[in-house]
Image (tube, rainbow, N blue to C red):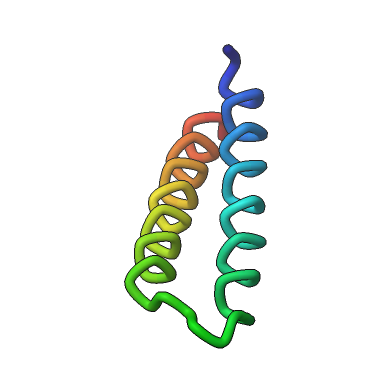
Amino acid sequence: MTIEARIRELGNRHRNLDETIRREMIHPATDSLRVRELKQQKLRLKEQITTLEARTG
């Protein structure tokens, strides 16, 4: 897999997590632990994307 393809894949996962977090937040019985875990996953993905983008110049 090329770096660009990996960046696209991670970007898609990042967007999917963003949508999942949004859906979790609109529920009246929001599980704050779940939301925090999702946000941490999203941050890790963003860090991976940033690292890969730096490698491509």
